Length: 269
Ligand code: ADP
Image (tube, rainbow, N blue to C red):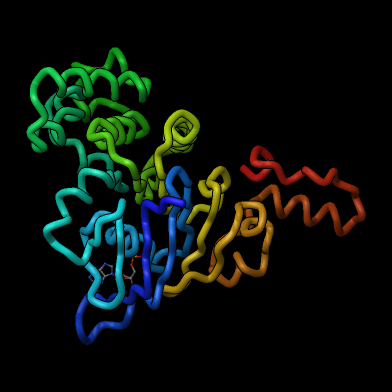
């Protein structure tokens, strides 16, 4: 079994006097797995995600990303090439005057030769359904399109892992759906390892596995079916039970028989 992320006994605080934000986290993410990290605001999700591409470095515990130890600064360039990140605010991530320049930005920084760069930019743009927008100014795009450009830039570097840190939380419902559908498509077509960070239970539905963070600890670890139908666990983590689950539970109170497979992915959303 190959693991792209391995976390062992990770504890972290921002300053010596500050409280611990992560408390003894141990976690493994398999190659090709889609892990959703779910938790209330302030539970430590973003802090944890930053360890995956060495934006934070452990002082207590160990984090390995794609076989490289993040504790060792000489490994950081390899890690950053293999673990791509997409963040919450698309406007902070798009820096170039056109979509194609933006997608090329990381490749230029990595010193990829011009011909190879062109090839990868167009490949990435077409994979993310952005063909025709190459010459557009990024700030003219919709929120969903902007996040797809950010994702295209990350994918052009051919990473093994993509981490989306609340990448949909500033988008309208359509933009959100657009980005989630893109992640689902990538999941099906490539052997990418995907980590999505979210406080919205609906976004965790399609993942292979969910961990729930609460006050810096992993409270739950299981399949979407296990986690999203466990009302008391969600409540404890200050998360809302998905609407479809609430309806199903109400109906059961009135002895309405539901087929066993009623809580399919579609119904949970
Ligand atoms: P989440 O992503 O689940 O909302 P965060 O990882 O952003 O949680 O934050 C966890 C805790 O760490 C919060 O209490 C937050 O205030 C604190 N925190 C986050 N970033 C910093 C920082 N740069 N300096 C000090 N404290 C921080």
